[in-house]
Image (cartoon, rainbow, N blue to C red; front, side, top):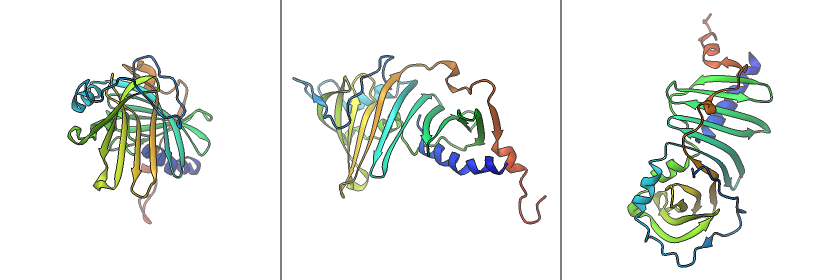
Length: 240
């Protein structure tokens, strides 16, 4: 029991960090992060429709999967995400241990699976974790009237519009590479006035309904319900 409870804070941290839960069933080829995007010859930024119309496409996406790379001053975080409706699946390594988490918005539960041990833990969650934003959440947080189209480029093999967006309290500069076909960002750069930069990249973005078994544990996995364990713990000094 003590060993299972020891996983609890790690599980909470993972669920807060990896929310996550976008482009046709054809994947874009990876491009080195340091390689600058290619400006499309003859491209006329903003001619293909307004920013509002661009992001409206993203709101029509019902399901997606992607790989993400979050780069900050403290390091790099990588993982995979599958998103459909109010369900999210994440796959990443924390402290060298692979963890696959499933969030179900219908039952408000999170199940985290440890493939190396073929075990899983389950706990309640009042809401979907949102610390690491999905492409749709990034797009939904933009005021189209304040976004400025800088250029049209080919990034990771697809046409994107590069947008400049005011940051929080004018203390940040945000640039977003948004796919023209799906209205979803594939790269977001946030630069503070102090010069610090955070970069979120979405790779192998695929849009479309996901297979039904995407959000299911493999058969035969032992699941420990943390909520039931906590109910059995003494409530205080006089608890039984």
